[in-house]
Image (cartoon, rainbow, N blue to C red; front, side):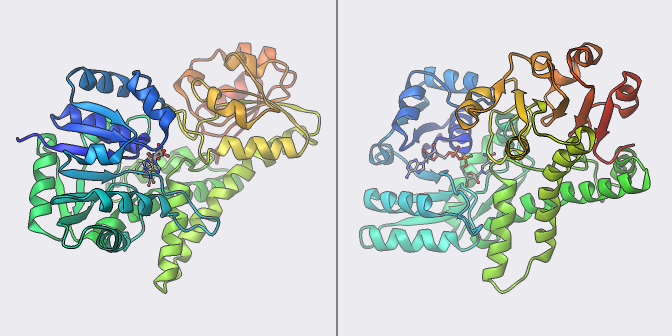
Length: 433
Ligand SMILES: NC(=O)c1ccc[n+]([C@@H]2O[C@H](COP(=O)([O-])OP(=O)(O)OC[C@H]3O[C@@H](n4cnc5c(N)ncnc54)[C@H](O)[C@@H]3O)[C@@H](O)[C@H]2O)c1
């Protein structure tokens, strides 16, 4: 393989992992970000996010001089053969994706384009963004500048991002020219992964269609959990029975507080909006979203059901991040639930193994506990909101002895309801007796 010169614009969860991992497979990568503090930290070897395995990959490749950081895109483009756009695409108030960061990068790239380059959309973007990027490059670039635009959606999961990138289920590239296809095939060749080549629009849709499908699985099992509660069945056994069918699969059939994070909620919203703009009412996904919102309300209702009035009560919350093994708090169910509890006058004491530093500035009214036991101390009820492994190892008998009243809401179905009952907890699990 001939190693390539790569520029990545946007050094967040996706950009940093992409940059570090492309360096790991032998390319020379420059990661660019407009956030000066982030670049300064990275230059000193400080990794701004919690992602298992990432610090080691970054350090090793910096040592080999295959990975560097800069705030200056023009400088990175001097040697680059390919530019990945990996900036954020946050939701607008109406649910559409805000593409202003993508546009800003496309304009900057256009101004520095001196020779043929492949410009790759790595951010999750709505269908037709490739067209818009192309238009922008033509409008702001030098007349006749040679480039290809490609779509290469990212499927990594926070918490296992490095492994997901280096051992992907598939790589999708949407291209319009044989030259861009050949280039990207070569770039990814060392990964020896299944590679699907499509047109740009199909590649763009694959990402939204995949995330929305996974969100749908989660909402489906949560709706089944609601029914299980009503009829007295156990959703864990129902999911187990469904999962044996290879057409269904066991993954993403865990009832709980629903999906959160920086991707699923915004991607479902954006997909609904995208369909609407194209003249299609994606009613199925509207129901997915509604069911998901309902799971957060479920937690507050269960606490209310057990404690009657929440005013003046102390609620311990285990877990803040939207899922284990990440410090990402974006759209985390725990945060919505804490806000709802505070609105009702409850006091909240929370503990998360890694996300507390990021949560503290957002929640001045919350007492941040030293550990899981400390979050239970004196509590009228405990809510498990994120299924960190560490919570599974806690001595529940001791936890119960620390609480004012032994009410346990297991929002992620981590514990066996029978075990909670045997310990004397008044307990609620999602869709389980
Ligand atoms: N986080 C995930 O798990 C994940 C997975 C797959 C896809 N995605 C998608 O990838 C994209 C990036 O997500 P993320 O989680 O890495 O976002 P992020 O917010 O962590 O990082 C984005 C970075 O882009 C930088 N940036 C913004 N505008 C810039 C500009 N003009 N020039 C240089 N840098 C700029 C920001 O400073 C930030 O550091 C989004 O579209 C997201 O939907 C995310």
